[in-house]
Image (cartoon, rainbow, N blue to C red; front, side, top):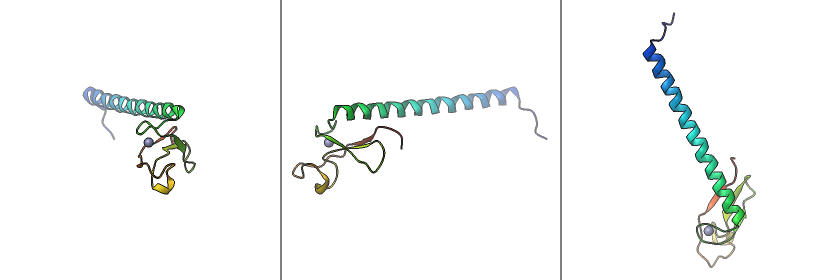
Length: 92
Ligand SMILES: [Zn+2]
């Protein structure tokens, strides 16, 4: 038979639970801010790193990339250096 928890153990367990909840809430908030930020960038239509346009990558829902992302054959202008910006407007 399991023994009853002491008041100390109960308090410790409650504190751990509260800490986990706070951590989960912080993660949810950070994630919400991330998607909000990417959505505002997409709405602006301008890459925050290089100022080029943006395009959607239809391979995954909500995936947006700089027009200058990737290998020269994928870039809008292969003469201009590549850019690494990409983001998601919603969770995958
Ligand atoms: Zn860019």
